[in-house]
Length: 225
Length: 127
Image (cartoon, rainbow over all chains, first blue to last red; front, side, top):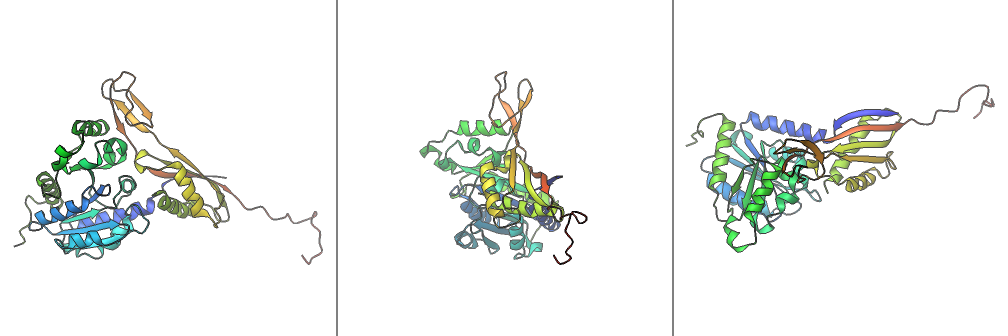
């Protein structure tokens, strides 16, 4: 007997992601899912982003790794609101894990939630967590061919970051090829060049500020003083 | 290897859509490029997830959906597994990869019907 189904396999994950999104929107929290390979600078980006923006807004961080709480320990030096998820053998975060981590925050206090996904350019791309934006992160030390080799992240990302731009004079990285590949995959895709470890994050912080403001539907950030 | 968690999600979904008393023998799944699924890895993950269950030995048929490409010059539209494939006119194309991952259909088998009762059965009354 033939049974016609036509239903998303990740329906359960998608349903939980929708619940996450609704709860985050109710609390006017702008949420990003940060996706990049191991060592591309995701944790350094989170540390310095929090350090630069913490006087303007309340930030929560959820960080996913297979094992250890090392990233959470690093981030907790600048951010009191950090939850580490250990996925064990899991190569990506799923919506229910984010949901459990969200329980640990006072959501009414947060303006921005940063989810640092497991270091992986493939698997996290297909899983909705309830975020507002997926951020795809590459870096100059991993080579210019990564967008071409991992096109799914380019297609899925709402914003792309090229980190370690300060190392450009010292590494073999064809910036023109990098940009051309992205343009071929996704014409008009926004790419910001940053140096996370050096705190050279001006365009990135501006991008975040404008989206957090929009989430508040207010012209300026609320005065918390 | 996100295919393992996909196989586990699929297992619950297949059970939900299988009529009571029946058993799924073929499971048809299709996915767009953004799901980054390796068909062979998903087949192995399915085999591992269904071991020692009623679905052991069932066959998973996976269809990888192609990219949709549109030529930037002549606007011809076509599909390909290569997001960088150039148009027949020689120009570059814009590629769009779907994010969908869907269980499309099942083939299920019903249990063997019971031995018909009646004239052909012996009538000892004790078995």
